[in-house]
Length: 187
Image 1: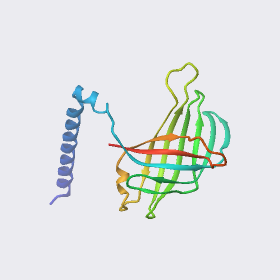
Image 2: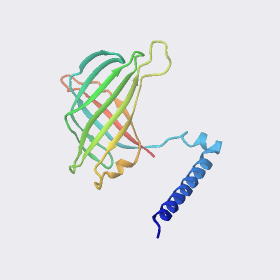
Image 3: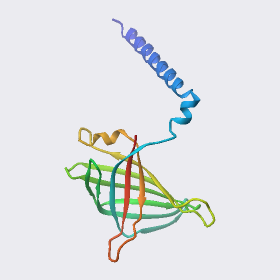
Image 4: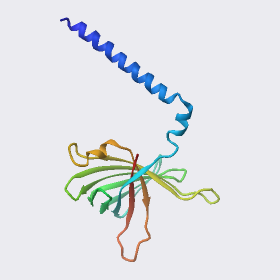
């Protein structure tokens, strides 16, 4: 058989598949009733809460984008309905206090499950404290990327979107500083 025949046939089949996908996707999204309601009521499932110990903040200083600072992640624990373990020391939370007063956080750290699996966490958050007279309260939410080893019992974490919360608890005297990060899977 001729190689060009296979090449042309493969090209035709690929084009046909792309057209089917495009038409199917367009027909799903062209219904105004569906497009307005599809994301109205997101549902989430708690995956875990982490008590993340933090070190002393390093103030990097003012930059062209705002004030930069870094907070070391020194350890901690996490637990949820299907998973638990420890937050490994060595991660960092890079922060940018923007000229408008909001703070962008970019944390990268590792967590080790109780059965020895290491997960990589990238947590990108936004904090907003309302100015005096501004409506609304303190706001902090994040988008979390979880990378689990392939063929591990936690591979399912690679196939979802996760949102996060951040709590800064009132510390007791002589208590080491920590934050509480809630991780929720978008269903």
